[in-house]
Length: 467
Image 1 (cartoon, rainbow, N blue to C red):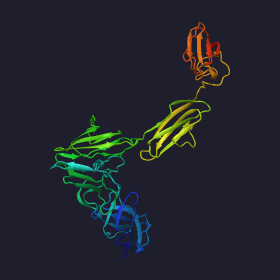
Image 2 (spheres, rainbow, N blue to C red):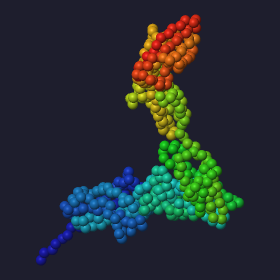
Image 3 (spheres, rainbow, N blue to C red):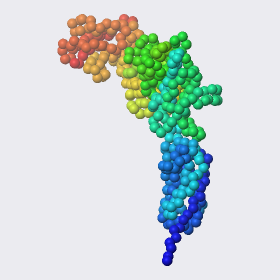
Protein backbone atom coordinates (compact mmCIF):
# COMPACT_ATOMS: atom_id res chain seq x y z
CA UNK A 1 0.00 0.00 0.00
CA UNK A 2 1.27 3.48 -0.90
CA UNK A 3 -0.07 7.08 -0.39
CA UNK A 4 0.49 10.44 -2.23
CA UNK A 5 0.58 13.74 -0.34
CA UNK A 6 -0.22 17.07 -2.16
CA UNK A 7 1.55 20.17 -0.85
CA UNK A 8 -0.68 23.02 0.35
CA UNK A 9 0.00 26.72 0.95
CA UNK A 10 -1.85 29.22 3.13
CA UNK A 11 -2.03 32.89 2.00
CA UNK A 12 -2.63 35.59 4.58
CA UNK A 13 -5.01 38.52 4.22
CA UNK A 14 -3.40 41.17 1.99
CA UNK A 15 -2.35 44.39 3.71
CA UNK A 16 -2.87 47.61 1.77
CA UNK A 17 -0.17 50.24 1.41
CA UNK A 18 -2.83 52.97 1.14
CA UNK A 19 -6.14 54.09 2.66
CA UNK A 20 -7.78 55.07 -0.62
CA UNK A 21 -6.71 54.81 -4.25
CA UNK A 22 -7.20 57.95 -6.35
CA UNK A 23 -5.63 56.99 -9.66
CA UNK A 24 -5.15 59.12 -12.77
CA UNK A 25 -3.33 58.91 -16.12
CA UNK A 26 -0.26 60.39 -14.40
CA UNK A 27 -0.34 58.14 -11.31
CA UNK A 28 -1.64 54.60 -11.09
CA UNK A 29 0.65 52.33 -9.03
CA UNK A 30 -0.33 50.83 -5.66
CA UNK A 31 1.12 48.07 -3.49
CA UNK A 32 -0.09 45.27 -1.28
CA UNK A 33 1.89 43.01 1.07
CA UNK A 34 0.92 39.43 1.97
CA UNK A 35 2.44 36.40 3.68
CA UNK A 36 2.24 32.76 2.62
CA UNK A 37 3.41 29.52 4.22
CA UNK A 38 5.21 27.28 3.77
CA UNK A 39 7.54 28.78 1.17
CA UNK A 40 8.68 25.29 0.17
CA UNK A 41 5.16 24.37 -0.91
CA UNK A 42 5.33 26.64 -3.96
CA UNK A 43 5.84 25.02 -7.33
CA UNK A 44 8.50 26.58 -9.56
CA UNK A 45 5.77 27.59 -12.03
CA UNK A 46 3.58 29.28 -9.39
CA UNK A 47 2.04 32.66 -10.14
CA UNK A 48 0.33 34.99 -7.68
CA UNK A 49 -2.71 36.84 -8.95
CA UNK A 50 -4.31 39.96 -7.46
CA UNK A 51 -8.06 40.08 -7.93
CA UNK A 52 -10.23 43.15 -7.29
CA UNK A 53 -13.90 42.96 -6.34
CA UNK A 54 -16.74 45.05 -7.73
CA UNK A 55 -17.61 48.42 -6.17
CA UNK A 56 -19.70 46.63 -3.50
CA UNK A 57 -16.84 44.37 -2.38
CA UNK A 58 -18.20 41.21 -4.05
CA UNK A 59 -16.02 38.72 -5.97
CA UNK A 60 -18.79 37.20 -8.11
CA UNK A 61 -17.01 38.56 -11.20
CA UNK A 62 -13.59 39.68 -9.96
CA UNK A 63 -11.15 41.68 -12.08
CA UNK A 64 -7.56 40.49 -12.34
CA UNK A 65 -5.39 43.58 -11.81
CA UNK A 66 -1.96 41.90 -11.65
CA UNK A 67 -0.31 38.52 -12.22
CA UNK A 68 3.29 37.81 -11.23
CA UNK A 69 5.73 36.06 -13.54
CA UNK A 70 6.07 32.26 -13.00
CA UNK A 71 8.37 31.53 -10.07
CA UNK A 72 9.19 35.22 -9.47
CA UNK A 73 7.79 35.36 -5.91
CA UNK A 74 9.28 32.74 -3.58
CA UNK A 75 9.91 34.54 -0.29
CA UNK A 76 7.30 35.51 2.31
CA UNK A 77 6.22 38.23 3.03
CA UNK A 78 5.88 39.51 -0.55
CA UNK A 79 5.05 43.03 -1.79
CA UNK A 80 3.44 43.32 -5.22
CA UNK A 81 2.32 46.41 -7.18
CA UNK A 82 -0.79 46.80 -9.30
CA UNK A 83 -2.80 49.39 -11.26
CA UNK A 84 -6.52 50.24 -11.25
CA UNK A 85 -8.72 49.78 -14.33
CA UNK A 86 -10.02 53.02 -15.88
CA UNK A 87 -13.59 52.00 -14.97
CA UNK A 88 -12.87 51.97 -11.24
CA UNK A 89 -15.32 54.09 -9.23
CA UNK A 90 -16.59 53.18 -5.75
CA UNK A 91 -16.08 53.29 -1.97
CA UNK A 92 -16.00 49.56 -1.03
CA UNK A 93 -13.51 47.75 -3.21
CA UNK A 94 -11.49 44.82 -1.84
CA UNK A 95 -8.65 42.70 -3.17
CA UNK A 96 -7.55 39.11 -2.60
CA UNK A 97 -4.51 37.03 -3.52
CA UNK A 98 -4.56 33.71 -5.37
CA UNK A 99 -1.75 31.25 -6.13
CA UNK A 100 -1.70 28.86 -9.08
CA UNK A 101 0.62 26.02 -7.95
CA UNK A 102 -0.59 24.97 -5.52
CA UNK A 103 -4.00 26.61 -5.81
CA UNK A 104 -4.94 28.76 -2.86
CA UNK A 105 -6.90 31.95 -2.14
CA UNK A 106 -6.46 34.50 0.60
CA UNK A 107 -9.15 36.21 2.59
CA UNK A 108 -10.51 39.53 1.34
CA UNK A 109 -8.71 42.75 2.25
CA UNK A 110 -10.30 45.56 4.20
CA UNK A 111 -12.55 47.76 2.01
CA UNK A 112 -11.11 50.88 0.38
CA UNK A 113 -12.31 53.73 -1.81
CA UNK A 114 -10.92 53.64 -5.36
CA UNK A 115 -11.48 55.91 -8.37
CA UNK A 116 -9.70 56.35 -11.68
CA UNK A 117 -9.84 60.09 -12.44
CA UNK A 118 -9.77 59.90 -16.22
CA UNK A 119 -10.94 63.52 -16.39
CA UNK A 120 -9.53 65.80 -13.72
CA UNK A 121 -9.88 69.39 -14.90
CA UNK A 122 -12.55 72.12 -14.67
CA UNK A 123 -15.31 71.96 -17.27
CA UNK A 124 -18.26 74.12 -18.34
CA UNK A 125 -22.01 74.00 -17.96
CA UNK A 126 -24.70 76.26 -19.45
CA UNK A 127 -22.28 77.30 -22.24
CA UNK A 128 -20.36 79.20 -19.55
CA UNK A 129 -23.28 81.61 -19.15
CA UNK A 130 -23.30 82.63 -15.49
CA UNK A 131 -27.06 83.02 -15.12
CA UNK A 132 -30.34 81.40 -16.04
CA UNK A 133 -34.02 82.15 -15.46
CA UNK A 134 -37.32 80.31 -15.37
CA UNK A 135 -40.92 81.45 -15.55
CA UNK A 136 -43.16 81.14 -12.51
CA UNK A 137 -44.22 77.51 -12.16
CA UNK A 138 -41.52 76.36 -14.60
CA UNK A 139 -37.91 75.24 -14.38
CA UNK A 140 -34.52 75.87 -15.98
CA UNK A 141 -32.41 73.01 -17.34
CA UNK A 142 -28.73 73.04 -16.48
CA UNK A 143 -26.55 70.66 -18.47
CA UNK A 144 -22.88 69.78 -18.90
CA UNK A 145 -21.51 71.17 -22.16
CA UNK A 146 -20.39 68.55 -24.64
CA UNK A 147 -17.84 69.52 -25.63
CA UNK A 148 -18.61 73.20 -25.20
CA UNK A 149 -16.41 76.00 -26.48
CA UNK A 150 -12.66 76.52 -26.56
CA UNK A 151 -10.53 73.87 -24.85
CA UNK A 152 -13.32 72.61 -22.58
CA UNK A 153 -12.53 69.01 -21.51
CA UNK A 154 -16.10 67.82 -21.13
CA UNK A 155 -16.49 64.82 -18.79
CA UNK A 156 -19.36 63.67 -21.02
CA UNK A 157 -16.64 62.47 -23.40
CA UNK A 158 -15.91 59.70 -20.88
CA UNK A 159 -18.96 57.38 -20.74
CA UNK A 160 -18.10 55.70 -17.41
CA UNK A 161 -18.27 58.90 -15.37
CA UNK A 162 -21.18 59.93 -13.15
CA UNK A 163 -22.02 63.35 -11.72
CA UNK A 164 -23.37 65.06 -8.61
CA UNK A 165 -25.07 68.48 -8.54
CA UNK A 166 -24.78 70.91 -5.64
CA UNK A 167 -26.46 74.12 -4.50
CA UNK A 168 -24.31 76.79 -2.87
CA UNK A 169 -25.41 77.62 0.69
CA UNK A 170 -22.56 79.97 1.68
CA UNK A 171 -19.21 81.13 0.28
CA UNK A 172 -17.64 77.94 1.65
CA UNK A 173 -20.50 75.41 1.88
CA UNK A 174 -22.96 73.64 -0.42
CA UNK A 175 -25.52 70.85 -0.32
CA UNK A 176 -26.02 67.84 -2.60
CA UNK A 177 -29.05 68.18 -4.88
CA UNK A 178 -29.15 65.34 -7.41
CA UNK A 179 -27.21 62.93 -9.62
CA UNK A 180 -27.00 63.05 -13.42
CA UNK A 181 -25.63 64.97 -16.39
CA UNK A 182 -28.50 67.52 -16.25
CA UNK A 183 -30.46 69.29 -13.53
CA UNK A 184 -33.93 70.85 -13.79
CA UNK A 185 -33.92 73.84 -11.41
CA UNK A 186 -37.14 75.32 -10.03
CA UNK A 187 -35.65 76.99 -6.96
CA UNK A 188 -33.58 80.15 -7.10
CA UNK A 189 -29.94 79.75 -6.18
CA UNK A 190 -26.43 79.11 -7.42
CA UNK A 191 -25.61 75.62 -8.72
CA UNK A 192 -22.63 73.61 -9.95
CA UNK A 193 -21.75 69.98 -10.67
CA UNK A 194 -18.80 67.73 -9.86
CA UNK A 195 -17.64 64.51 -11.44
CA UNK A 196 -18.35 61.74 -8.93
CA UNK A 197 -14.95 60.69 -7.61
CA UNK A 198 -16.36 59.96 -4.15
CA UNK A 199 -13.95 60.67 -1.30
CA UNK A 200 -11.09 61.41 -3.71
CA UNK A 201 -10.29 65.07 -4.15
CA UNK A 202 -10.55 66.29 -7.73
CA UNK A 203 -10.41 69.36 -9.99
CA UNK A 204 -13.23 67.98 -12.15
CA UNK A 205 -15.92 70.55 -11.38
CA UNK A 206 -17.97 73.10 -13.33
CA UNK A 207 -18.48 76.83 -13.30
CA UNK A 208 -21.27 78.14 -11.10
CA UNK A 209 -24.60 79.33 -12.49
CA UNK A 210 -27.08 81.54 -10.64
CA UNK A 211 -30.73 80.75 -11.42
CA UNK A 212 -33.57 83.18 -10.75
CA UNK A 213 -37.33 83.33 -11.28
CA UNK A 214 -38.52 85.85 -13.87
CA UNK A 215 -40.15 88.90 -12.29
CA UNK A 216 -43.06 90.62 -14.09
CA UNK A 217 -42.60 88.28 -17.03
CA UNK A 218 -39.09 89.56 -17.84
CA UNK A 219 -35.70 88.04 -16.95
CA UNK A 220 -32.08 88.97 -17.52
CA UNK A 221 -30.45 87.06 -20.39
CA UNK A 222 -26.74 87.21 -19.63
CA UNK A 223 -24.44 86.92 -22.67
CA UNK A 224 -21.06 85.16 -22.36
CA UNK A 225 -18.16 85.71 -24.79
CA UNK A 226 -15.98 82.65 -25.45
CA UNK A 227 -12.90 84.82 -26.10
CA UNK A 228 -13.59 87.19 -23.24
CA UNK A 229 -14.27 90.91 -23.52
CA UNK A 230 -12.24 92.68 -24.84
CA UNK A 231 -11.51 89.85 -27.25
CA UNK A 232 -8.76 89.07 -29.77
CA UNK A 233 -10.12 88.38 -33.29
CA UNK A 234 -6.83 86.71 -34.25
CA UNK A 235 -7.84 83.75 -32.04
CA UNK A 236 -10.73 82.93 -34.37
CA UNK A 237 -14.47 83.41 -34.23
CA UNK A 238 -15.93 84.59 -30.93
CA UNK A 239 -18.94 82.62 -29.70
CA UNK A 240 -21.64 84.54 -27.84
CA UNK A 241 -23.91 82.38 -25.65
CA UNK A 242 -27.03 83.20 -23.68
CA UNK A 243 -29.39 81.41 -21.30
CA UNK A 244 -31.42 78.45 -22.51
CA UNK A 245 -34.91 79.09 -23.85
CA UNK A 246 -37.44 78.05 -26.47
CA UNK A 247 -36.33 80.47 -29.20
CA UNK A 248 -33.82 83.29 -29.74
CA UNK A 249 -33.21 86.44 -31.80
CA UNK A 250 -29.85 88.23 -31.89
CA UNK A 251 -29.29 91.92 -32.68
CA UNK A 252 -26.24 94.06 -33.49
CA UNK A 253 -26.36 97.76 -32.66
CA UNK A 254 -30.14 97.47 -32.42
CA UNK A 255 -30.60 95.82 -35.81
CA UNK A 256 -31.86 92.26 -36.29
CA UNK A 257 -29.17 89.82 -37.41
CA UNK A 258 -30.82 87.74 -40.11
CA UNK A 259 -30.71 84.00 -39.35
CA UNK A 260 -29.24 84.48 -35.85
CA UNK A 261 -31.88 82.47 -34.00
CA UNK A 262 -29.83 79.99 -31.95
CA UNK A 263 -28.63 80.00 -28.36
CA UNK A 264 -25.14 80.82 -29.64
CA UNK A 265 -23.96 83.36 -32.22
CA UNK A 266 -20.45 83.65 -33.70
CA UNK A 267 -18.79 86.92 -34.68
CA UNK A 268 -15.37 88.52 -35.06
CA UNK A 269 -16.69 92.08 -34.93
CA UNK A 270 -17.01 94.72 -32.23
CA UNK A 271 -20.31 96.34 -31.35
CA UNK A 272 -23.32 96.13 -29.07
CA UNK A 273 -24.87 92.68 -29.33
CA UNK A 274 -28.19 91.87 -27.71
CA UNK A 275 -30.56 88.92 -27.60
CA UNK A 276 -34.22 88.22 -26.88
CA UNK A 277 -35.04 84.79 -25.43
CA UNK A 278 -38.48 83.21 -25.33
CA UNK A 279 -38.77 81.24 -22.07
CA UNK A 280 -42.33 80.06 -22.70
CA UNK A 281 -44.65 81.94 -20.35
CA UNK A 282 -42.14 84.79 -20.04
CA UNK A 283 -39.16 86.23 -21.85
CA UNK A 284 -35.60 87.43 -21.23
CA UNK A 285 -33.28 89.95 -22.85
CA UNK A 286 -29.68 91.02 -22.46
CA UNK A 287 -26.82 92.80 -24.20
CA UNK A 288 -23.02 92.99 -24.25
CA UNK A 289 -20.71 95.76 -25.50
CA UNK A 290 -18.16 93.65 -27.37
CA UNK A 291 -14.78 95.30 -27.80
CA UNK A 292 -11.94 94.12 -30.06
CA UNK A 293 -8.35 94.22 -28.77
CA UNK A 294 -6.88 94.89 -32.23
CA UNK A 295 -4.62 97.94 -32.08
CA UNK A 296 -4.50 100.96 -34.39
CA UNK A 297 -1.31 102.01 -36.16
CA UNK A 298 -0.08 104.13 -39.07
CA UNK A 299 3.08 105.01 -40.98
CA UNK A 300 3.93 108.53 -42.18
CA UNK A 301 5.47 107.79 -45.59
CA UNK A 302 3.94 106.96 -48.95
CA UNK A 303 4.22 103.56 -50.58
CA UNK A 304 6.65 104.95 -53.18
CA UNK A 305 9.29 107.53 -52.26
CA UNK A 306 12.27 109.25 -53.89
CA UNK A 307 15.40 110.84 -52.47
CA UNK A 308 18.83 111.93 -53.68
CA UNK A 309 21.93 109.85 -53.06
CA UNK A 310 23.17 112.12 -50.26
CA UNK A 311 19.78 112.40 -48.56
CA UNK A 312 17.91 110.29 -46.00
CA UNK A 313 14.23 109.61 -45.30
CA UNK A 314 12.91 109.49 -41.71
CA UNK A 315 10.01 107.06 -41.23
CA UNK A 316 7.76 107.13 -38.14
CA UNK A 317 5.24 104.53 -36.95
CA UNK A 318 2.53 105.41 -34.45
CA UNK A 319 0.53 102.67 -32.72
CA UNK A 320 -1.79 101.96 -29.80
CA UNK A 321 -0.35 98.42 -29.41
CA UNK A 322 0.53 97.29 -25.89
CA UNK A 323 4.30 96.89 -25.39
CA UNK A 324 4.93 97.09 -29.16
CA UNK A 325 7.96 95.65 -30.91
CA UNK A 326 9.24 96.91 -34.26
CA UNK A 327 11.17 94.87 -36.83
CA UNK A 328 12.50 96.69 -39.91
CA UNK A 329 13.49 95.02 -43.19
CA UNK A 330 15.39 96.15 -46.29
CA UNK A 331 14.94 93.92 -49.34
CA UNK A 332 13.50 91.15 -47.07
CA UNK A 333 16.54 91.21 -44.74
CA UNK A 334 16.24 92.29 -41.10
CA UNK A 335 18.00 95.60 -40.44
CA UNK A 336 20.24 94.96 -37.44
CA UNK A 337 19.64 97.33 -34.53
CA UNK A 338 16.46 98.85 -36.02
CA UNK A 339 13.97 98.17 -33.21
CA UNK A 340 12.30 101.53 -32.60
CA UNK A 341 9.20 103.25 -33.92
CA UNK A 342 11.38 105.65 -35.93
CA UNK A 343 13.90 104.68 -38.63
CA UNK A 344 16.16 106.81 -40.81
CA UNK A 345 16.51 105.22 -44.26
CA UNK A 346 19.72 106.07 -46.14
CA UNK A 347 19.65 103.38 -48.84
CA UNK A 348 17.47 102.78 -51.87
CA UNK A 349 15.33 99.62 -51.93
CA UNK A 350 12.16 97.92 -50.72
CA UNK A 351 11.43 98.38 -47.02
CA UNK A 352 8.92 96.95 -44.56
CA UNK A 353 8.24 97.23 -40.85
CA UNK A 354 6.35 94.72 -38.67
CA UNK A 355 4.57 96.15 -35.62
CA UNK A 356 3.82 93.46 -33.01
CA UNK A 357 1.75 93.68 -29.83
CA UNK A 358 3.53 91.59 -27.19
CA UNK A 359 0.82 91.57 -24.51
CA UNK A 360 -2.93 91.18 -24.72
CA UNK A 361 -3.96 90.21 -28.23
CA UNK A 362 -0.38 89.62 -29.46
CA UNK A 363 -1.00 90.30 -33.14
CA UNK A 364 1.09 91.99 -35.85
CA UNK A 365 0.63 94.35 -38.77
CA UNK A 366 3.12 95.00 -41.58
CA UNK A 367 3.71 98.14 -43.67
CA UNK A 368 5.59 98.28 -46.98
CA UNK A 369 7.30 101.20 -48.72
CA UNK A 370 10.09 101.71 -51.23
CA UNK A 371 12.73 104.38 -51.83
CA UNK A 372 14.16 105.09 -55.28
CA UNK A 373 16.81 107.54 -56.36
CA UNK A 374 15.28 110.87 -57.35
CA UNK A 375 16.26 112.77 -60.47
CA UNK A 376 18.15 115.95 -59.53
CA UNK A 377 16.20 118.64 -61.35
CA UNK A 378 18.62 121.38 -60.38
CA UNK A 379 22.15 120.05 -60.97
CA UNK A 380 25.09 122.41 -61.30
CA UNK A 381 25.63 122.89 -65.03
CA UNK A 382 27.89 125.50 -66.61
CA UNK A 383 26.37 125.85 -70.07
CA UNK A 384 22.92 126.05 -71.59
CA UNK A 385 22.39 122.75 -73.46
CA UNK A 386 21.21 122.75 -77.06
CA UNK A 387 20.06 119.13 -77.24
CA UNK A 388 17.64 116.92 -75.25
CA UNK A 389 16.28 113.39 -75.73
CA UNK A 390 12.96 112.99 -73.88
CA UNK A 391 12.71 109.17 -74.13
CA UNK A 392 12.00 108.38 -70.46
CA UNK A 393 15.42 106.99 -69.52
CA UNK A 394 16.02 109.76 -66.94
CA UNK A 395 19.07 110.89 -68.91
CA UNK A 396 18.83 114.28 -70.64
CA UNK A 397 15.02 113.97 -70.67
CA UNK A 398 14.44 117.67 -69.90
CA UNK A 399 16.17 120.93 -70.67
CA UNK A 400 18.49 121.50 -67.68
CA UNK A 401 19.93 125.04 -67.52
CA UNK A 402 22.30 126.75 -65.06
CA UNK A 403 20.83 127.59 -61.66
CA UNK A 404 21.20 131.34 -62.26
CA UNK A 405 18.16 131.14 -64.58
CA UNK A 406 15.82 128.77 -62.70
CA UNK A 407 12.89 129.42 -60.34
CA UNK A 408 13.55 132.15 -57.81
CA UNK A 409 15.80 134.27 -60.03
CA UNK A 410 12.95 136.19 -61.77
CA UNK A 411 14.25 135.04 -65.14
CA UNK A 412 11.84 134.77 -68.06
CA UNK A 413 12.10 131.63 -70.18
CA UNK A 414 10.44 131.52 -73.63
CA UNK A 415 10.58 128.50 -75.95
CA UNK A 416 9.25 128.72 -79.53
CA UNK A 417 8.90 126.49 -82.55
CA UNK A 418 10.94 127.16 -85.69
CA UNK A 419 7.88 129.03 -86.96
CA UNK A 420 7.89 131.42 -83.98
CA UNK A 421 4.98 129.87 -82.05
CA UNK A 422 5.47 130.11 -78.29
CA UNK A 423 5.09 126.65 -76.71
CA UNK A 424 6.44 127.46 -73.24
CA UNK A 425 6.75 130.65 -71.16
CA UNK A 426 7.46 131.11 -67.45
CA UNK A 427 9.28 133.21 -64.86
CA UNK A 428 9.64 130.20 -62.52
CA UNK A 429 11.44 127.59 -64.59
CA UNK A 430 11.90 124.20 -62.86
CA UNK A 431 14.07 122.43 -65.44
CA UNK A 432 10.93 120.58 -66.47
CA UNK A 433 10.46 121.27 -70.19
CA UNK A 434 9.03 119.36 -71.96
CA UNK A 435 6.47 118.07 -69.43
CA UNK A 436 4.24 116.61 -72.16
CA UNK A 437 4.98 114.66 -75.30
CA UNK A 438 5.94 117.00 -78.15
CA UNK A 439 4.18 116.75 -81.47
CA UNK A 440 7.40 116.32 -83.41
CA UNK A 441 7.23 116.71 -87.18
CA UNK A 442 10.81 115.63 -87.79
CA UNK A 443 13.34 113.26 -86.22
CA UNK A 444 15.54 116.07 -84.87
CA UNK A 445 13.21 119.00 -84.43
CA UNK A 446 14.64 122.41 -83.52
CA UNK A 447 13.14 124.88 -81.01
CA UNK A 448 14.35 128.36 -80.10
CA UNK A 449 14.75 129.83 -76.63
CA UNK A 450 15.00 133.32 -75.21
CA UNK A 451 16.30 133.81 -71.68
CA UNK A 452 15.79 137.27 -70.15
CA UNK A 453 17.26 137.89 -66.70
CA UNK A 454 15.94 140.29 -64.08
CA UNK A 455 18.45 142.90 -65.20
CA UNK A 456 17.28 142.50 -68.84
CA UNK A 457 20.26 140.54 -70.06
CA UNK A 458 19.27 138.21 -72.87
CA UNK A 459 20.51 134.87 -74.12
CA UNK A 460 19.17 133.18 -77.25
CA UNK A 461 19.80 129.83 -78.86
CA UNK A 462 18.37 126.59 -80.22
CA UNK A 463 17.26 123.29 -78.64
CA UNK A 464 17.34 120.19 -80.80
CA UNK A 465 14.91 117.50 -79.66
CA UNK A 466 16.20 114.06 -80.60
CA UNK A 467 13.33 111.71 -81.27
